[in-house]
Length: 492
Image 1 (tube, rainbow, N blue to C red):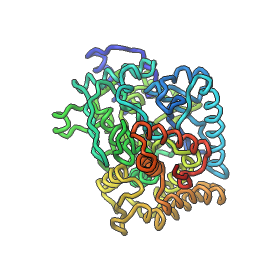
Image 2: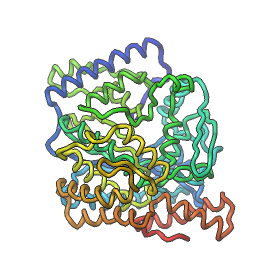
Image 3: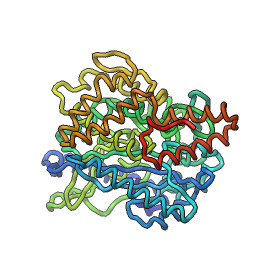
Image 4: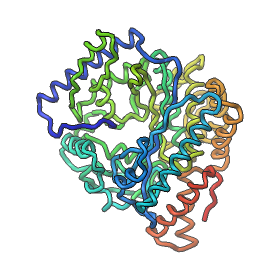
């Protein structure tokens, strides 16, 4: 959804033209895959982090336009809500000290942005869901000024034909109605990008799906929403419901949701794009003047604009990405399962665990997905979103076991091997995987710290819930700036 969209109304002819064009793009994509027109020589990794903005009272600050103007850095961009911004970190290779360079770059960029944001009365917070958000703040007025967000909102509700109903049953319960998609803006994430060849894409995507639950359990950081303690990663059910284009009757017919885990292991990247075209109607049927077949026949590289825009409105937790950089096309797995935060070093440790583990699994002699049903991977994902680092998961050969035990016994050695394959410096590998190890040993991640802090403030300090939530955010921001990994964070 990073594309600017100019059209404001769509006719039946627009939709018919778009359907034909996106299928033409799919045919051209298939031809490109057959002829190996892809950059595979120096695979790169990338990182995006979505951020919340708060004021001096730890409440949401609807100031992203002012903050972006003050920051004046093209790597920072608008996001759905006026209390959100996003940083896109320049891609790099992991070999040597690549992970440390990621950390240095992100810290320097965020510190500089924080200094500028303060000049307009705002502060940056890396957190999955801002605990101090209130229902009256997530209205149409909270949408960012970019026209594409208003248009996306209109099209989702046109497809639904009725208001959203969001119901989440966790430690506490929440049921609300919404007449805009702004509840989606509450969900701020970290996205890891991994460039892979067409031949390897299915193995890497399948591996990413298989470990998605474990990632969420270790990195959960969204336990509080609208003053309620819900799932440890409430961002997952909230995002699924806040962008749902299906009314109840359509759900009952088994129509697939646009926020989608998927339903099967794949054999090629084409499977995923073909599913997108086959199952999902266009939300934004905007046609590009380029004829992709003519461009390819002339020796050029087609942008496949319609296929890419369509892909951007289908929110897979592991999304396939086709892109063109410096005249060369490439493919990426975009890993979207993790929340933002708590700190930069925690984020980079999460990335090291992910990049190492997916490589080890993708290159294993006996693929994990040949031993594990797809539904088991999805059940792990749901259980880990609900219970976080305390979740039980299924793993082939081990059965059901605590997720921390699985990571310590089986997955950390695999991640270490994968990082060696990437050429990551041993001391850097050990530093980052040591953070994951300590998270498992202490049982503390962002979600557990937030909940324990809230309970302590309510019981020991006898604060009411709204006051306690502001204090949670205040303490969180202080510790976030320390860059101490979350397993070392003290309780107030």
